[in-house]
Amino acid sequence: MKNDRSKKVILAEPRGFCAGVRRAIAIVEQALDVYGPPVYVRKEIVHNHYVVRQLERRGARFVDSEEDVPEGAVCVFSAHGVSPAVHAGAEQRRLDVIDATCPLVAKVHQEAKRFARDGRTILLIGHADHEEIEGTYGEAPDRTVVVESEDDAERLDLPRDTPLAYLTQTTLSVDDTAGIVDRLRGRFDDLAGPTSDDICYASQNRQNAIKDISARSQLVLVVGSRNSSNSIRMVEVARDAGVAAHLVPEVDELDEGWLEGVDTVGVGAGASAPEILIDRLLDRLAELGYADVELETTATENVVFSVPAGLMRGERRRPAPGTPQPADTSPTDRRRSAGTRPAADDSVRKA
Ligand code: SF4
Image (cartoon, helix red, strand yellow):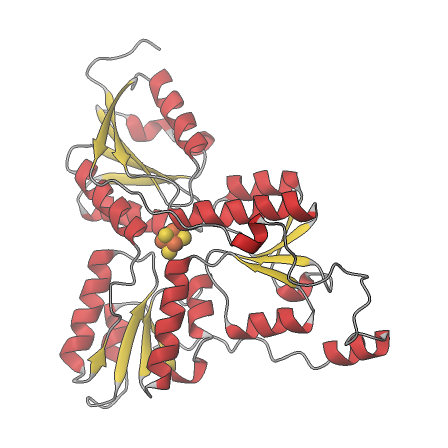
């Protein structure tokens, strides 16, 4: 189709991969290079189906639980983090664990441990069924309550002077979270918080970028998978700004009906969406007459998280399976050891 000069795309910058996602993907790629396939990955390494498929083609095997990984095998933990019970389960199976937890998620785990040590009840703001919340919750399950909404904050049945602390999932809506924290501050006198905002720089920057382009667009499209929390928040941010908005996991899910009567389309992408999926969407929009692309930059990102140095040097933390080990002398011992696996994660307790 010929370019229609009245039609254009406003492309958000920053968009797509954040530092934690780049690091997690690089860890799986490096593990495949060093150890060869299969490399097991507990859960999706990042929440993007395209990324997962590409890594599967190279020999990564994605599993739901560390218990699905053969004893002694290499296992990568995803960027969303895991609970101590998962680490213990992996230890029992003698897995060669490479932890790809984003350092910004790891920081929230440290805060949870600190608040629990201080005797505070932790109000964990986030989505109870998200892997990141399951992992953080597992740091102090007896002292943690998940708060998903302002209504949950109102429903908390705790005395006003309870020593409390709040923490948040890293990928939440900045505005929604502020509303929940305000409610908590109004209800409780002793509420500690994290030293710095838990919502990560990448989520904040992408939400700001979407707010900015929403003010100038009639339709906003966000490239990201349906299980990507930060991508879903971006769609909500655009809708809250009063503009029609949709998630586009892959270009074949673009509904051309959305474009009827639309001259300006805003395009952004969640922190786990690869640039190739954004390019494919832009190519399709160009075919539909939206060939002019204006870049709207609201922030510059230069955060880099490095891959563990030992992995870069090709070091295994455990001997390869089959290597004789003094503490692992008989199959009977190994079976006995496997039988004492710790209990699975406590289920997440909601407000
Ligand atoms: Fe880390 Fe934020 Fe990226 Fe999640 S979205 S991997 S917390 S930088």
